[in-house]
Image (cartoon, rainbow, N blue to C red; front, side, top):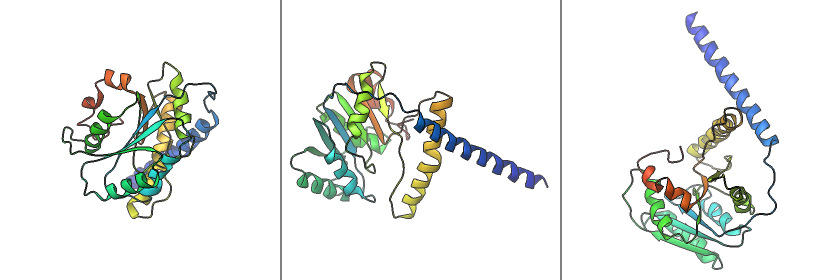
Length: 230
């Protein structure tokens, strides 16, 4: 009987958490921040760390070549030229000669976090003050940069991140990642931000200024942390 009540309690808590997260998402989406209509559009450096070929990698990278934004560069960064993602990055660059695309292959072992090792050479090579770190499995719409740069017009904002949703993906792992993103991550982020006023940063999309990032120590503060966005 005690085991029954333990499972009943766990089920109740799970359902309570689920419905709380669903409610939080609905409330969060209803309370959209005030739209900013007049704001500067500074050039942006987009850093894309690559490792291996994920589902829809080519389409994901191409979506960043279709951004409706005046000036930006894309830096694909890898550790090994034999990485199959290198060929995909080259294909994207060749098919979009009008875009400012750089591919950096530079082994780096400064950090325990392999993503940080990818990002350090790209960050050092980036040309612009505004830096956007974006994972390789992210696909965006044409207004992506405009929508997040507009938030940086507020001098009190040091970093802008985005809610994400998992779509596509054909492999077993991708399906479970989408389930995790859509059923847990988005709900938890909305709940913490909306009701506990604890902002959560999602590493798949992080826009910041170099002056602010360097002021907190840059990558040296996160190089040995697995969840660098935490």
